[in-house]
Image 1 (cartoon, one colour):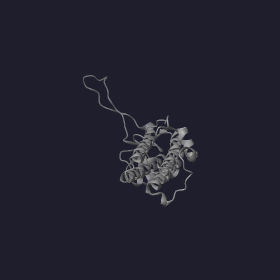
Image 2 (image 1 turned 180 degrees about the vertical axis):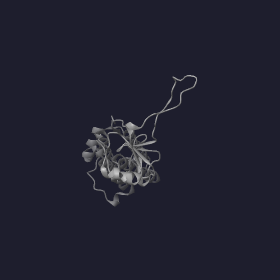
Image 3 (image 1 turned 60 degrees about the vertical axis):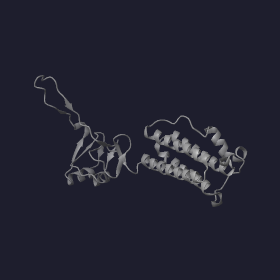
Length: 247
């Protein structure tokens, strides 16, 4: 059962001037929230009491009637309240559903946005240094990340995980045993490794941040996809030091 508190009301109304709030009938409105609405002369309407407005009958056929169904522009996912204008402290989650900007899905999307920005930045560095092979693999990483974001937005499960022609099991094995598969020991990044390796390490740490922020989404497939991506970027770092991108 959802609860609408006074503090939530204040946040909703801070940026939105309205004379009525519409909530779902299953929402519990606290006494302090009701008192606050009374003080502000804001009408509280429950959704099941919003009646369809009927248009007058066609004089030629009185049995014909049209119904003008109430369709809100935005709906609060947490309270069920309706909005005609989007408050500044809220944003769209799915369709016309609004949530506050600190909602876990919105935080996750922000992390993915930052990750994409860093991938593009390192691509520019690689292109400047004429590392065409690295640019190509970074483009694959970028598309992989964009597919993760798409799967979250459209609520579509991630089925297969592959990168650089490697299956997820191969990525995991290579990241755990780089000496065996790549020819270099496990690495501890340092500035002498150069801007491309340090840039890749930045991408890897951003992936980890995105993975942590995805925990509250209830999407184990996204967690797994990001976990494998961090391993894949580590493999890229090892490959770079082994001279793979100079071939």
